[in-house]
Length: 153
Image (cartoon, rainbow, N blue to C red; front, top):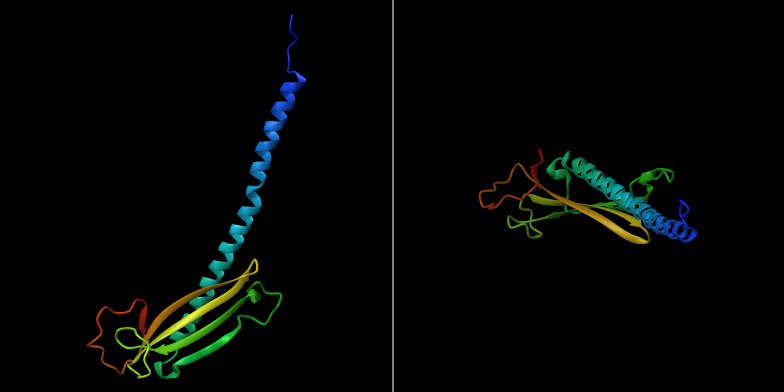
């Protein structure tokens, strides 16, 4: 007559399989946390870049000379702020109707905002661009209007 229950060997095999499964599941958590942190920083960079674009677009066209509008600087001087890991740079260039850089003022300027941050010892950046038009220029020759283009008043 056999006894009911598990043998020591069966219990040992079941416990080993359970532990292997748990270790595999627990290894996912650090990866998930790292990906969540990366996504959070990228999202914050997108918001910061959009905020800078809106600041620049609120200016008159004549107040936006070509060149480095804002050199690379820290987003905030408060070192306790979560934004202290970010730097920003705003560059404005004159472009022609084909969106090629030019030294001649054609009434179209491209605004490039770049947000920089360091993530796990690797420098990351997010760049967004928009076009600002002078209301005093004629754009009859413009084909294929630039995406995100706005007219500054």
